[in-house]
Length: 79
Image 1 (cartoon, rainbow, N blue to C red):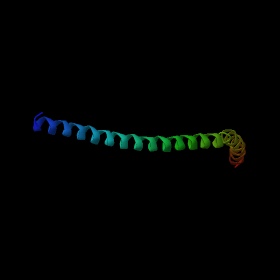
Image 2 (image 1 turned 60 degrees about the vertical axis):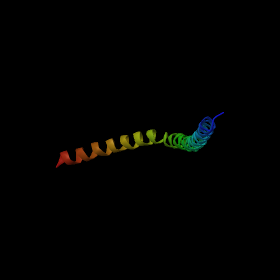
Image 3 (image 1 turned 180 degrees about the vertical axis):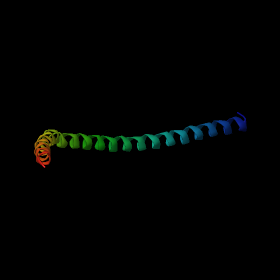
């Protein structure tokens, strides 16, 4: 086998190994990113669950303020 053929095979093997190492490192980084995104997603679900009751509270406040608004308009109308 000529030296050029052996050299080409060795270079091809080195290239494949370098590409494999590069792709493995990318896969690890994507795995870490995926784990962090899962944590963020869980946090968002927690925030959503904790803020659901706010809607009914805000409606109550709006109803109370509507009464105050009506009373103040009545006072202003008397003047």
